Structure formats: structure tokens, C-alpha cells
Amino acid sequence: MLLLAFALADRFNVMRQEKVTAQRAAIATPQQRLVETLQNLERELSNGVALATAELDQKSGFAKATLLLT
Image (cartoon, rainbow, N blue to C red; front, side, top):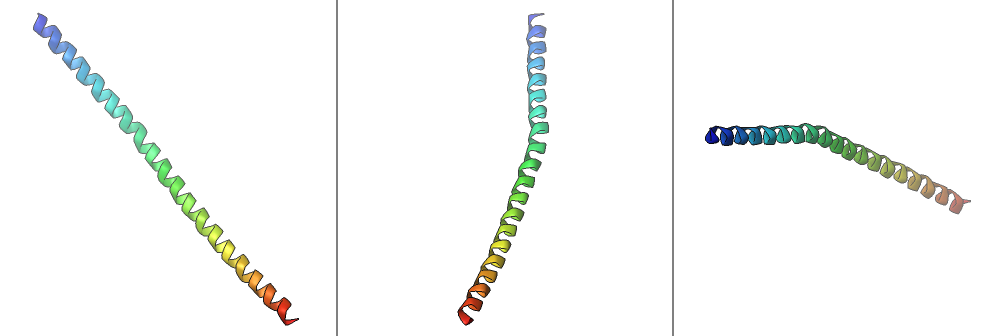
């Protein structure tokens, strides 16, 4: 009888650990997708800022050249 109680307790512990592992996996997947989405948005924003900066630099250089010619 004692052996049966230990076996049952062990089975409960295994099931509890499996549940915790499954819950962690279920949480990790959406979090990873969020991280990837944020990284992609950060790259897009950085590229947009770099493009806008280059355009402003180009316009600024053109304006300076125009002022020097006049």
C-alpha cells in the first residue's frame, strides 16, 4: 500500500511538472512573436529615420549650394 502511495505521488509530481512545462511553452511562443515584431518595427523605423535624414541632408546641401551661388 505504501508503495502505491509513493507511485501515485510521483505520478502527480510528473503531471504537475508537465503542466508547468506546457504553460511555459504556451507563454514563450507569443512572447517570442512579440519580440520579433518589435525588432522588425525597430528596424523599419531606423531605416525610415535614416532615409529622412539623408533627404534632409541632401536638401540642406542643395540650399547651401544655392545660397553660395547667389
